[in-house]
Length: 364
Ligand SMILES: Cc1ncc(COP(=O)(O)O)c(C=O)c1O
Image (cartoon, rainbow, N blue to C red; front, side, top):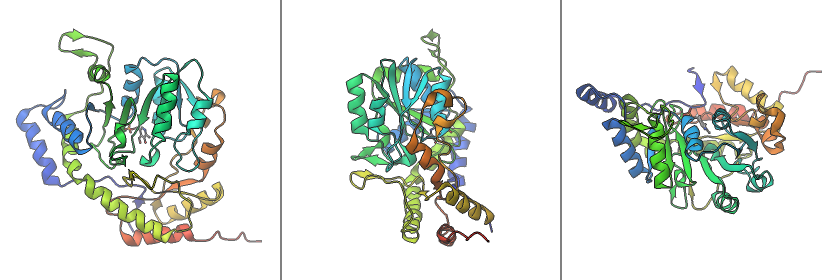
């Protein structure tokens, strides 16, 4: 039987994609804010909807650009339960990552924990909408306003999730997204950044292209541009996003039916529309998590320990990071099951069956 990974890249209609590629051949315009990239930015702004959005080269560099745009050089409060890119962007920008523990229900950063680690050096919060579930945006906003902090959301997982009738990407002073091939909406490699403030957006626009516009040099920027070939993929995938989310919803709901007793993180039931980006389950122990993972792998099914390890345990931050008991505990017991548009029902049954199998008693 074919190998099943935790996710499978969505490939759009090939003719649609090749039609865009033909336009590149016709225009001989391959990169540098080309017509397809500009079209993609417009189409995404209409789709979400949002404004002040830039498509960039990936979902990591946009986090770095966010810190640069706000001149952040001090302490940044962040979550230990995220992909390592969230932390690395802070470290790479020579800022100090300060971890706040997570909420045991949503697995997003806990507002109480944020408050407990604020110091006079704190300048910003980088919080991840884990699995596309919303952070407690209202409380985080209130804390940031009280302490004069910038709020940057790593919304890498949140494309298509909506809170209070608007895209989750619209929250925060800056919000970033990843358009990596594993994501619901993708450009093969890519990412986006949205700024609330027009002046910040203008800075980000310059930062993306080395800090200059033609012969006018403004600031030390970086190369975070994306190409016309990537934009062609984005333009081809974007119209299919509602269908992709619908199919993922059906797979998720089948898992829900088949795994009624399995523990799961929770997202708000009201005023929230989920993008069905992931299907995380939380097992009773690390031993049981590894047992299920091994059993699935023996059948050529590859779930993912996502996120593991808790980022405060990484060797380059461990010494000063402090403890995050909730994140450390959950990260040892979490497993994301395969979820993607087109995952066959029979495979979902097979996966659920293995997850339900009782532990084999040790031979005495
Ligand atoms: C939460 C989170 N932040 C950032 C990134 C980095 O995105 P990219 O791979 O596009 O650089 C990822 C990628 O998976 C992610 O999951």
